[in-house]
Every structure is written in C-alpha cells, then in structure tokens.
Length: 560
Image (tube, rainbow, N blue to C red; front, side, top):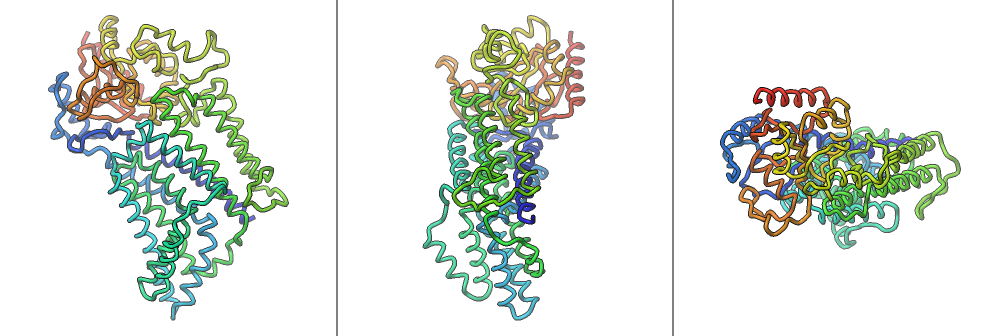
C-alpha cells in the first residue's frame, strides 16, 4: 500500500509541474529573446511600462528608435513571484527524484554511513547537514553554469525559435524513452569511479565528493528530470531561472537526506526497494513524451508544416493516456517491470484518472474546446473537422471569410472573429468604418495567448465587443513566413534583418510600444494613439478585461 501511495503522490506531483509552469508564465509574459543586450524593455503593466508608454505615445514616430534610457525595468530577469514559481517547480521535481530507483535505495545507505562513521549523534547530524549543503552547492553551480553558457536570451528563444523547439522535442523524447527502459543515459564510468574514490577521504572533502557521487551515479534518473525542468522554467523565469530551479531541486533532495539522518528510525517506515520504483520511471516517461509534443507543435505552427494538427496532437495524447492507464493496472508490461499479482485500490484510482483524461480528450477530435488543456494543444484553426460545422473544415471557413486579407491564408483568429493580420490594412479599414483598433500581439508558441483566447475571449460579453465594437488585428510575432524582398528592411531596435512576418510585427511592437511580450493587447484610435494606457497583457479576470474594453470604447467615443 505504501508503494502504491508513493506512486500516486509521484503522479500528482508530476502533473503539478505544468500547473506551476503555467502559473509562472501568467506572472511573467512570454518574451522573445532576439533583442540586443543594450535595448531594455518593460514588463507588461509595470510601473515602468506605464511611464514608458506615456513617453512613447507622445514622442515616438514611425521611424524612430525606442531609447533604452526611457525605461528602467529589464525584461527577462523575472519578478520575485515568477522566480518563486520556478523554485517551486524545482522543489517538486526534487521530491519526484527521491522516488526514482537511482536515489531511493541510496537513502538508507547514506544515512547509515553518517550514523556509523560519526563518534557522536551530533557529529553524525553535522556531517549529514554538510552533505545536504554540498548537494545544494553542486546543483546550484550546475544551474549557474547553464546560465553563463546559454544566458537568459538563449533559454527564452525556446518559446519562439522553431528549429530549436524541434531540438528540444527530440531531447525530451529521448529522455522519455530512456525512462521507459529502452536505454539508460549515464556518465562515463571512469568519471563515476573517480568521484567515488574521492568520497572515501575524511573530512569535508570526503563528504563533498560523496554528494558529488550521488549526483553522478543518479544521473541516469535525474538527468531527464533536470533537463525537462531547465527547458520548461527557462522560458519564463529569466536569467536566474536555471539557478532557482536547481536550488529548489537540490533543496528537496538535501532536506530528505538530512531529515532521515536526524531521525534514522523513520527509515523503517519507508517501503522496500523493488519493481514499483521502475513503475515511477515509466509513468514519468509517458508524461514527459506527452509534454514534449508541445515543443514540436510550436515549431509546426510557426513554420506551417501541418504535421501536427489539433486532432493528430490530441489523438497521440489519448493513446498515451490509455497506455498509462493500462500500464498502471498491469495490462501493459515493460522489460524491467515486476509481475503485478493484483490491482490495488490506489492503482485503480490512478488508472481511473488516466482513463478519465483520455475520455475527456476524445470530444476534442470533433472540435470540442477542451478548455482545461487549451493552452497546450494546437489552436482550433488547425482542426480539419468540427462536428456540426457546415462548409468544410475550420481552416477552410476561416480562409474563405478573409480571402482578400493579407496573411489570411495561413494565420487565423479564434471564435470566427472577422479580423485582420496586418496592421496597416486593419488601420485603413478602421478609419473607413470609424471603429477603434484592438491590437493583439500574439504568437504561435505563446501558451498564455491560447489560454486567454479559450478562457476570456470565449466569454459571450467579451466576444460580442470584439466582433462588433472593435477591429481586431492579430499580429503574430513569431511567424516564420518569409516576407517579399521588397518588404524586408533592417530594424535598428531589434538589430536584425526583418525578413519574416513575425519579425515585422515584433519590430512594430518594440518600436511603437517598447515591449516584445505576448500576449499584449493595445486599444488604438484611428489616429494611432492609445485609448487606454498602459495596455494589458495576461488578464484572466473577465470583468477586468471587459472594463478595459469598455474604457477604450468610452475614450474613442469622446474623440468622435
């Protein structure tokens, strides 16, 4: 029963990782990284952003370059709340790592090492504390090394760079397959033996290298977990994200070893090592493979490959959920698994969760919104068939409705909003019909954008205003479609050649509004001046979002 309970806790904690990641993303908008270091952008809705927008709207002209001196908040460093969320994700990952077969059996051995080696109980506890601190130092140094090598910009590019997303997908796929038992990712044996030999020395050096040996020996289990953690939190936590993630991860592990060293009698309450530890790895492997698809989907959307449409993505998730459910009840068995003589109540409960999730996803194959996972699955515009919708696929209907509009053949707005995808074209139409502009700076890889569209835009009151009172223009800042040679130019604010549709609108957002965060919603009058300042980013409070829209309409009415 204890084994199954621990398996249940593992499943719950790993499902909690995307929730923590989502929470971190809500606190800090997704930010592209292809921006020079000397150009500083503000966070959406910050005090500095408000002040900057006040300057920009009065002084910035079409060809001006936004000065970095006008703002003080550095984008990408992340707020304290966001970093705390990254720390929490790392801490949860550390708790999960404790239950992996490379670490769990080492707890009694390590504790007995300190209790037998020390002359007194106090010295044993002191050694355990030093051991725990050494674990923290080693993993934090790893996070710091990753930050120094790659930097915040490289980590943030995971959210927008298509081919890098494919690379990360392959890495996570390999990690997931390794958890299923196909192979093990290990460090060279010579390096492992060298670390182990140094751990025999006395004093602080021996304890430190003993902690290093734990990190090295357990790499086959913790490597995929750490890799997944660094990839996911690196997109939203900024420059310090890898350090905070590794601190949370190592703190969880260190606390476990120190606590059992202080209270060694508690070890008797732990279940014995066995096949259930491999079950933990398999469950994590299946979930990791499912989450890896999100990175492939981001690249697929940005480059319009069309290989992972919404129904294909959901179908794969359904299959993985069923495999997980059948595995938990023992109907599927991998090479390293033990025989399961009976199905306990707890295992049946976990399998029930997996099967319920699979059945929840099935209506999504026919166009159901699936709000619970809308931020992770591809948008409805990629759905080839929607039950009850006449006139063909959702994509075909959208293209037909905007057949004469620029970029409408490959870009889409949800909820059948009759909008635009090019700023100049939308502005001309807004002046013609005398309606305000609703600028939606968005992206294919923007998780919060999809969640805003599913949770907020879908509200009948919000949708009515967007359809009837505003001219909506969705500007995709990460689209990789090449611009015609005649439309390409060099951007001073981005310090790059603007040669894609995405870069065109990223330049517009950076130059005009001094930010490159998505989602970013700007209300403009036909005179191209902001109706409400500052604009807003993520806002899941529907009433607050409605107030923002109403305030824009009131300001526009006063100008007429």
